[in-house]
Image (tube, rainbow, N blue to C red):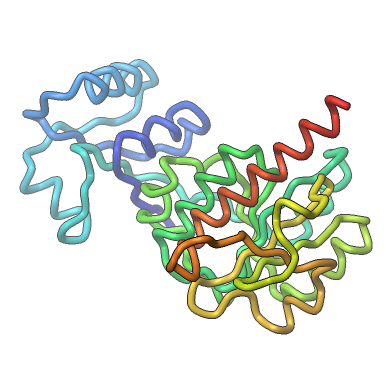
Length: 249
């Protein structure tokens, strides 16, 4: 089934990473955006079918209120991987760096987490099959196209997957508000899988049973928790910092 992506970032990334996935492009005909002009030229050179349309027609292709930035692309379905793809990562990557999102059902949060994962160099994002937002156009827009690049692996049984990762000597690190284990006091070096939960409930109790340790981000203000994508960024980049420090010494 074909899908829609929109926004300059998302289309630029698809054009750079997987341009053969384009089916058709719709661009606002009276725009005044230099980046959009450059993107149009690049797409034209690739032979992608481009339609220059008015704003009214463009907005019929997305939900009301969506900020499309003057460009919408019809694409083939984005590849989503099954759990056996983890075997490929473990066999080909010396020190896997994984992000596990337990019950992140908000598309904006999923997209932001995928964008952060790409920036941190995460090898794959793992989500449960039935308790996660779908890889829709909102996810792709918020991720700035990173969802095209970072493999998203949907698994039938998250606990079983975490157990499998443990058997591969991958450290499973869960997160929870109020944990006595300070993020900055723990050793967090790949191979590692960071597990983040939903803002309302955190990681599920069953999921936490398969974590080697549970850590928390120290809070010093009146706010008791962070947005999941912000917390994800803090944790992922602390892992990077520790990894670089361990290499340096």
